[in-house]
Length: 434
Image (cartoon, rainbow, N blue to C red):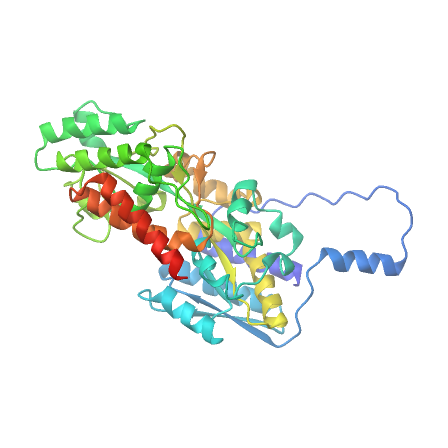
């Protein structure tokens, strides 16, 4: 990669799209301490060990995505910048329909004619592991790129059954608690710290506004995961399911009781509960911190309520996944683009385009990102110190389906213990069929 041109292009791109900050000047490199002399051959070997191998000229890789608007523009500009900085390497970004995207990717990858890169969740990557369709990204990324991962994000990125790095998380998000500030102020309420406080707030809201619901989970799956994980019961791993416990049943009963009382709802008008919130038929909900731009009424923000034996909230980390086609040159180019896209200023611009918090410390240190984050109050309520992600194992795909059904059944009045047993049985049956 031609570093000087790359940095200049990145800066021009970030400034034109974000109009934020100025890139800090790099600190001058310190002179190395005196050491024993090394031969030219030894020096060349050390340099080769530190840097990923360069790909041969003329190699093309593709990125499939569903991005639109600012995200699409930023990605296309980043691809153009990379291609200009790396003659002989070509990256092509191809837009795909949102509906059925993951199924289309899976079928194409298995047929050998799919994309080289997608940006998605670790759980999506896990689908490809057993068939050998994922590259070990540590073989193709620069050491300084891998070093960007925190202990928490690397734990998720290597939580696959083989323990290898099959995703590079590049942005994060998570849920926060949004509430109608006018109603909360009128009733003397504050953002709840616990689930018990949330139920008390909703009771007061229902008494004052019988036609309104007090609360909803924008994602019932993540709501279920939160209630379960806060009990201290790990949900699942590659082989077992653990959430059918008395503590989890108690949490599910809490959800059912509040639905039955009319305090909570799981029936939304549109695709997201932000629409009900804007229509003021819903007074509070837990939804993505990135959803702030879609809110049209005066709102307040709080953290996700706690109440179990441990503190926990979901972390939604999206990252680059590189597929394996037994083509070394394609994998090298895909790795080179991943390095490029993870550079601090480039990553800062992507966070801005996506309206997502950063994961990398060097990104957070840029003036570009600092100005962006200072204007996003919701980011301060994500609590990364206890946010967690699930292991990237096949069980996760089945568990999400099971949890959605579980919450729907519980909301509909099904006995919570029976609903839990059915959820566990569903996952076990799917695993047995693999």
